[in-house]
Length: 375
Image 1 (cartoon, rainbow, N blue to C red):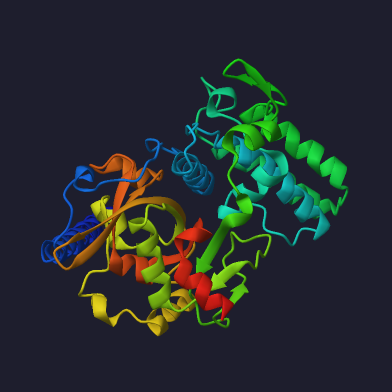
Image 2: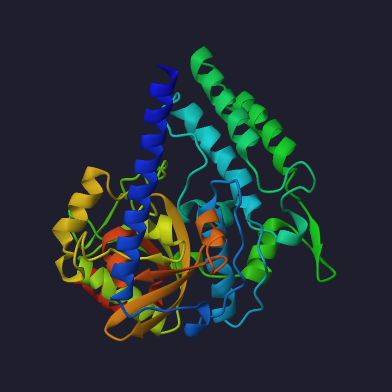
């Protein structure tokens, strides 16, 4: 009997490896038929600071949006500063605790978030340089597994005991956050001058937060209106995403890059091309030919759960290779760091159209969308 079970296990493992190899080979053949970049140097990138590895954390939203802010500083003629990715995380959990208590445990309490999470924290709390508030050395760097477990335990206990005391909840969460992340600085020195997080934002970072727009493209709500992006990480139920048709969505995203504006994007990273190649995100023609990607197909993928809100990355370049359009993105997720690009990823136009849920960009970068929504 043991021999029989061992044989079954070996057969299953062998079949799994064969199927995996088959998918990889099909992907490689499909990619070979597409003119495509071979290295990051094939692109002429917009100004940005080097990519960082988020390691064992689930805070791509903070890595991406702070990276976007850094590039916006440079675009506006300022000296970019490496910003703390931990500062927004700390205060976002404080805000999530308030909402969790207010809704009596109905609000989502987990590590995920969106662009708006960082922008709201910056607006309400300010921001600090990475040099003054970053991951601890030694036992903790960028591994948040223990942090998440303790926070989840607190949330479960609050809900189970129905202890809806906001002050007490914040005290419990703050204690855990400071245990793993440290205490955010109330004052600090930068270039020999003392700042608070708020004064650092207003005097050094100083980007116009109200001038940034979130754009999406779905049929579940009317076009030409701001809508709620219906994904679990939108725990605040933010409804200021401008909804536009897919052709306008893609065209404006591409034109923004061409005109010198980088973008933060919210995307699905569960596709085989992303997971297996660790370098190229594209929709192979045997799954769906590029010309067959329509608004309806995009909607079906989203409503069925085939497209999910998995990941945020920062697009910093665009280039056409033959008849194919490709984008270069900073990517903090481990897959990008396992591949040859070390923190960067190539996104094909097919992937943008089908698997990118939304993007964040300065309003001046998308005049066609602004005209569309004003009519």
